[in-house]
Length: 269
Image (cartoon, rainbow, N blue to C red; front, top):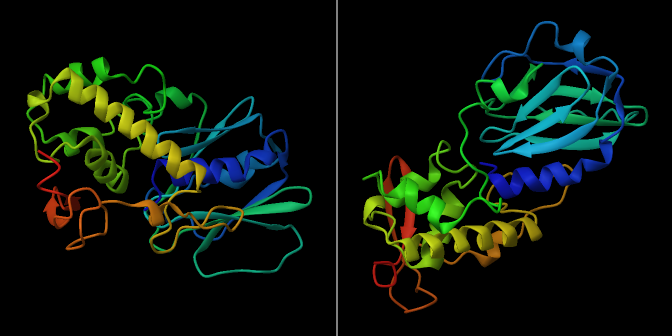
């Protein structure tokens, strides 16, 4: 599913639409994870986009009265076309029409969503989110303070959006491998030094992924049609039974909280 680097890549791909006006929209299928507001098309008509930002895995289009919150879910993506294009794909659920372009929201599994809010900070999807991992405030001491109060496995803790946002499964595996920390280690057992190392690795992994457009494993492409190439840099995720690139032992795979976890039992202690 699109994680923070893929969502940030998408945001950057549509950043040129800041300052432009959504002349109209068309909802082809309102039945996403949460049903689209029945007045959506009327509210979005002549929607002046002041800013396009990202919070966690959400893209936010801000106007002077409303903010539109878009979540790509597990299989969602945006596509930019000329306004006159008659290209239509299965699962094109919402279309946004500008003066000469249009943005199409496509979502085969319909786990994504689109919401309107007057106060975005109090929206139920935003209000309880944790710190952004690329912010300066996300430090080793900040993570250590959270870890010291939890017996949860460290991988589960950093994937909990109430603690830190946007560190999805791929990047959690990669960050823990880079920091040489076992994903099953109880959070409260991590030292402040280990937390500092993990924070540094999370920032490094996410920034590197953003630079190359995220990770295209199955069906993620950015709004400009480009694929993500971070999959060629993966050292742990998806490398079950392959040689560890550090110690030549085997990369192991197991299921943790219903998600695949990849790690090296020799390097990650």
